[in-house]
Length: 226
Image (cartoon, rainbow, N blue to C red; front, side):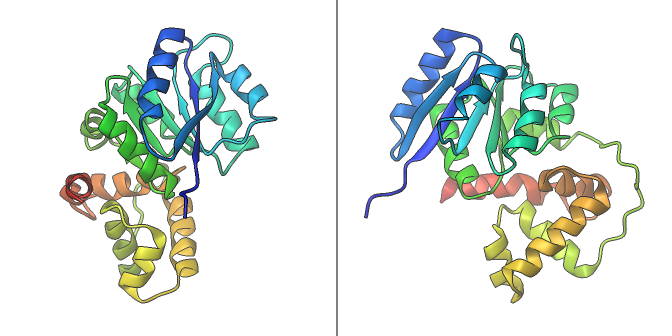
């Protein structure tokens, strides 16, 4: 049985980069670039007629930049997975982008194996952050209104397992509860911490010393060995 094709869009204002990135993706099995755009406005126009699973999105672009674009995507296409692909991986850029619902963040200098790993991971509804970005993530302290969150034992179990890159179904199996129960806990944790995605919850838990940052780092080391 043939695998379902993962349909990808590339949004970057440099033609040479778009074409080069498309060439890298063309070598990945079951992945196809179906849309290329030079800015967010053209992406949104293309999405009206072209079905896309994952968008690789640059930050600095004319007419509609990455921040404006992802805000519109979250509103209009909430199930669309977005991976930021940028040369900006400073604290400010990453923290600002994490306020939106993104599935990953890669440096433009990412190796082809990391790009493939990001696509396959995000396609499973997990999150993927490149090595250089992860170094920034573990140093970030988030400005969250409620900085005195108290987590239940079950919530901590779910956060810890999520930090280890387990999917909701895998967490459910591990804790012997339903997948729906896991999702309900995750929804509650997003609201409790004021986070826009579950990576924000994990990083909040790390910053408040509820879980060890090594759980977050080791998950990527383990996934590379699989």
